[in-house]
Length: 297
Ligand SMILES: NC(=O)c1ccc[n+]([C@@H]2O[C@H](COP(=O)([O-])OP(=O)(O)OC[C@H]3O[C@@H](n4cnc5c(N)ncnc54)[C@H](OP(=O)(O)O)[C@@H]3O)[C@@H](O)[C@H]2O)c1
Image 1 (cartoon, rainbow, N blue to C red):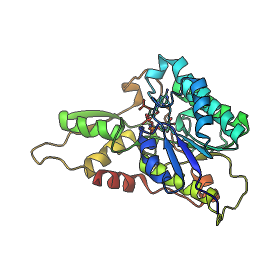
Image 2: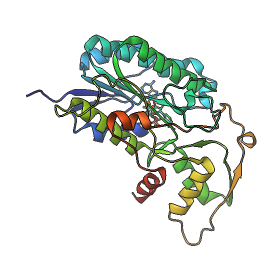
Image 3: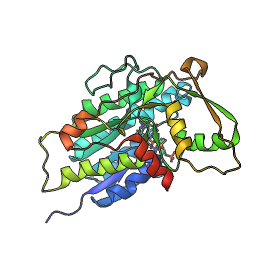
């Protein structure tokens, strides 16, 4: 009988990392590290820690995720999002471990209206997207066994995200102007963590029914369906419970051009999830169903 694999989890207090603590626990022994326990900006410390823990699987949801701030801190964003994944990949390769990493729809330039496939050309519009793309490439160049899950518009019950910001603002302001020309899929961090565990379960199970021996590479992984930030806000308002004395905030749709930010965002953030379904038989639930479950908590 083989023993349960040791799984090194980074960013354990982040949105996705927090959920992964639970979903990975049934697959092996999870060593969950926050940024204090392993600072991804310190390559030597990362190497030391990975060698000390000697995991069979490294799951890396940690990232520099402050999209606008990254425009003014490109070096730090590059160190955390590009150099560190490269170091984790080198160490994974050295130890024969599998690296699971997360990336973003922001690797694309947002043109057109067709959902992006994994093989479409990348052309990030902002520093964050460029550093995440560099991270993907560093992992691919290392030659280690890896899975890179590109996702979009992540939210959950904790952390910093659109859902929590909207819930607060809808109670504070009579009117909110919300961008309506960026289209994508809001994705519940819990669904990402569940799907990650299901994929890993297929890989570590002796009863694995995978159709390929070499599933390594990039996969798009988002909740199904699509909407705009304005549509997402409308759904939050419809599903959320408000005090009866509180008049619903008016949600005014605006174009991105009326809401300038330091980082330019892609208009088309749709990601085609077919490869995930074809390889692992997985499709995440519709974003509205996920939102209802998240708000139901
Ligand atoms: N959020 C989104 O909308 C979105 C969209 C597409 C893709 N993604 C990708 O999905 C993944 C998970 O995102 P998320 O929303 O869960 O992110 P998150 O909630 O912002 O969490 C990021 C985590 O990274 C950790 N971190 C940051 N700098 C670090 C450092 N120098 N050393 C070690 N840890 C560090 C943070 O630790 P501390 O809390 O200790 O600082 C935090 O726990 C990331 O790869 C992200 O790029 C996210």
